[in-house]
Image (cartoon, rainbow, N blue to C red; front, side, top):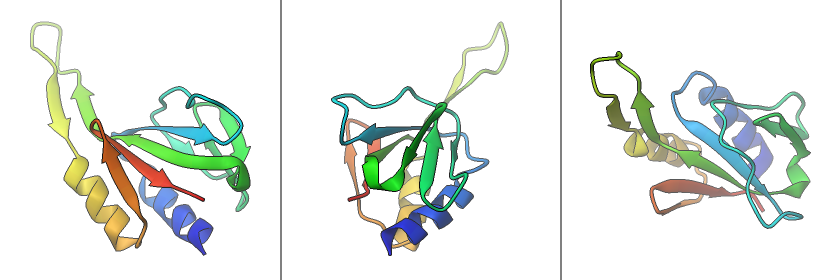
Length: 108
């Protein structure tokens, strides 16, 4: 079942420097970007203080570009983790697509 794969995936994403948001079927827009993604129970997912049932979820979006603050006098460092995210998604056998550097995981 795809939800079991997503639950395992969420566990792997717990300490990663990527940003996440989700798109619900009932809304025309996605949630705000968040530094974390959680599944408090097997039927729900939470991103950016937005808790929803898996059944209401259209897709999960991942921003794999990390903009790391180094210091006041040093420019931020940009890291592209796209390949790392894609490798994890392939390992969990999940379908995804990349749109304008954002990785979309279709849930339904």
